[in-house]
Amino acid sequence: MTRPPVRTAPPGAVYFSLLGPLTARLDGHELPLGPRKQRLVLATLLSRPNTPVPVEVLTDAVWPDDPPRTARKNLQVYVSAARTLLGPAGHEGRDRVVHGCGGYLLRIAEGELDTLRFGSLARAGRAAAGRGDLAGAARLLREALDLWEGPPLNDLRDSAGVAEEAGRLEARCLTVYEDWAETEIELGRPAVAVDGLRDLVERHPLRERLRAAWMNSLHQSGRQAEALAVYDDYRQLMARELGLEPSPAMTALYRSMLGRGREARRPAPAREAVSPAAPPSCTAAFTGRPGELRDLLEVLGCGEERVVVVSGPAGAGKSALALRAAHLLADRFPDGRVRVRVRREDGTTRSRAEILAELGRLCGVAGNAASPGNTASPEGGAGGDRAATAALADAWQEWQARHRSLVVLDDVPDEASVRGLLSRSGKCSVLITARGQLAGLAPVHRIALPALADGEALELLGKLIGAGRLRADPGAALRIVRACGGLPLAVEVSGMRLAVLRHLPLAEYADRLDDPSAALDELVAGDVSVRHRIASGWQDLADGDRWVLGRLAGLAEDGGFTLDRATEALGCGERAAIRAVESLIDAGAVTSPAGEVTAHAALYEVPRLLGLYAHEREGV
Image 1 (spheres, rainbow, N blue to C red):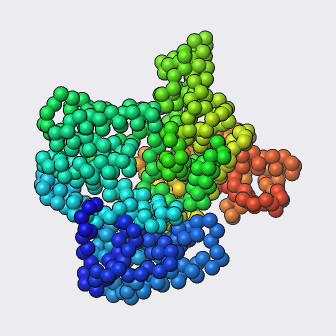
Image 2: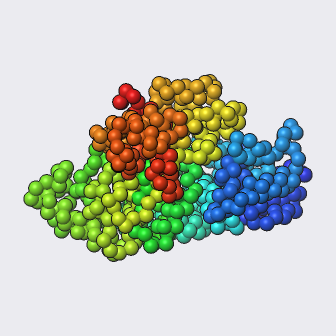
């Protein structure tokens, strides 16, 4: 990051840079980019080059809290300004900014955008390393890094949407820097990487691969004491922040340096270890949920609410949202973030003893009479096992009272599973994900996940099948996501299936999903099955609720049902119908209006795929 950036735009073409502040240059002269909102739109389009960007994403980037009624018209003005800046036509005379499929697509070539050039050079460098051409790899990776001028989009990071894109770009830059540093070390030139690695470790202290490269560069430069001190600082930081030890690979590197000279030892392979106590960012396919994510960040970030429940049906993306929030809230919880699943893989509920044992292991908590070996009994056991569990529960409460951490309790089946785990005092916060709304927990902040909007669902599908295929038949793509009921899991499975079946036209797949008798059979990709996930949620329902859901699913086919229709279908009185419908709302199986409305005026809905499964099971 210390050399002048390399500019590759052809004469007469505008060159855009995101790897630093947003800039545009024409023949070496910087161009004005207009007011801040216009720059936010341009940055969002450039951060997703040659890919449709939904209008909702652009709107959230510019007006995260309260978009004006004129938001769409204002966006058209900002996009028009981008067209003027880019020029009227690009390659083969095609329009540079295209509107369609619910958003805008910006066409731009590698020589016109630093992130595209960066990715091309990084891929070439890694390919050279794979061929054994380390000198060529180092040169190409260094050329890529010369484009990195500082934190990406650092002038626009007060927008949550732009900040999220900037974080992804910075992670890519860090990975390439690690590749380059390790290559230089292997070439016997460690000194060239020392200072840069030190600066980056100070900014990203828990990134283990960076720290390993810094240790090795110091060691190979003859500065063994400093290299060992880097490890010791990291060990103390891990213990203090996360209650963990460094990874086995990092420890092995440290031991290899003790008592040795300068003999070379390359760090662990090019992977970043992810600690279970520090939830990773979500998958690349994570899309949408800007309002819910903003709500989570505001509530947990201000520290006023200690328990938040994120609810929604199976496959709604609750865990993905929770992990994304935990990742973004790292600086607000200096004592770490931990995630524990409350169910086993087969869907059964883990015992309180098992959960406490895992929390204790992750956070370094130990009760006076407790140890992981004492918690093998599913019910906590009798006598010594009960005493061990009680001791660990007390130790867990004491730990929460002394620390500021975020605990993610994932896939909670009911209130009883977590009551003894919630902090009674101190500054720890708990983020719970559950299919039902866990009405018996109070006081808590509640966030219910609705179906994805069409634009969000199309964006998710496009990430998996490619923007070009999405653009080829946008109408069929829209039919697919609507047949999935906007359920993120179903959209993702559709995308994974279509990514493998490249020959399958989107329209034909949409026809399959439109068929009620075949839809669930189509929503399978490898070992990921939407039917299996829905079946797990079905098993959570009481027998009476399953029968009611089967009856109501038939009413929901035309878009929803009223209380009067539910009363008729269930063959019961009005009060009994209200209780039955509200029981399913509490379980997350029926959705109701977000605003206040009387029971008679409300329009209730059963998610499409859950309704299809209910038909299968109940024969309605």
